[in-house]
Length: 333
Length: 290
Image (cartoon, rainbow over all chains, first blue to last red; front, side):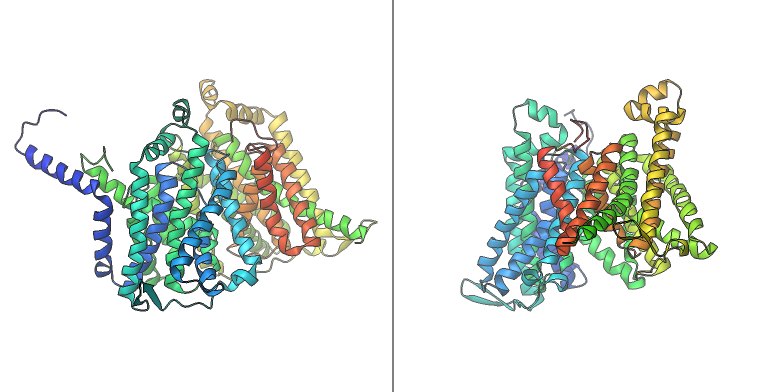
């Protein structure tokens, strides 16, 4: 660091210190921001969706943003999380606190299977293979209609109250719903932050920067990729569980390529490789969808065009670009 | 099970596979040259089907649609390369992929605006309605025509790549674009042409598939997945691989459809997974590229 001669130096170092404190407590700061969200957005329903997709995209960000693996099949884990939660509640009569962990475990097993095949490939192959295998899961769910409800999606379960240690929370109230679901988001945020702060978090970033060098340093690159693939699937599955509890139905589309693509769009709009970017991305996408569909049913053409502009000119997304404007933020995210 | 039924289903599989071959070939040629996987390939296949349908009704003849749609959509592909994809050479390999993915969103929605969201029937050309007696059974004329046309296109492509000066430049450019530049070849123009060729092949696949499957804005999604499966099985960048894997997948799908129709779509993904476990680079792929 060079010696600073002007009078603005103290204020710069102050804001630098503030930023350092904020990013050291990023889970807490993110939770404060999320707690305020329902009061900042025009509707509570929108806030719930931002929360759910924020978690899904955050899990995806671990794989794409931090490890550099562009998967086009993450709907498989989001959808499996949602389906298993719904099936466990409706068909097996399990309470939510048993259904959600079960769904996350099942999605992680699926991620292990898909990851075993897809992490054997590299680069563009990886994107194509994850897309194809996720479509396989989609068609399996379509065919197994006695189990999943097929084309109509999974229906016939309602989550109207949540039992929190004997305290019955009315889950139909949107504010209650939001803050109950925020507990799941808190768990996901904490796990994500813990992974990124660990030595393993450093290894996955090393793999992104230079796979060969990471291998030369003695790391088992294939194993790390598989592990991060499973972790990423597990976190996205938390979002899937949240979605099932929220909607009380699981549409078949939650497994479709369109959903995988939406997750990719959200992470890029917000900012891949930034901690809070996924929530910004989810909010941007969902607000765009809401606003544009007010004046045209063809909102996808507008969102697609904005996405193309982002790829060309703002590849770091909204949050990533904002962070880059802070001169001291580049070294720590 | 009747043997002639199995043979007929085999022919159906080859016809289905022929369309897959043409579509996957477009994808694999572009990758082999430019190192870009076009995620809008399925959407451009769909645009090809719509363009063929529109031009056929405009001119009153299927043949004009078949001829003009690949040319026009191919030219549109060149525009895409020139305006958008070109900016991303030298950046991360993910960027062209993301860009073309966003583009597919725009194209699908654009077609919905112009032609509506519902499927449109694509009439079989009058000359090709009916069946041919193959000795073992009757086979639709149109499917036989598709097989023959794809064989001709493959032969022309092979002649172009192996026997002409242009083909020599293309093959050398795939190996080492830097050297080609040093030798005074404007590699940018070659890439432009190849991208257009790839998109044109997707559009040709779309027109050919039109009378065999329903034409709707979402048809590209399954086609994209199918083309990916074929290129992954055959080996990305390998032309022989695309041909062999395309026919293999087509035959596999129609054979399974005979015995267990509900598994027909699933089986190709399973086939891909099995090949990846044994040969991650695909059947004809070069090692180290996967």
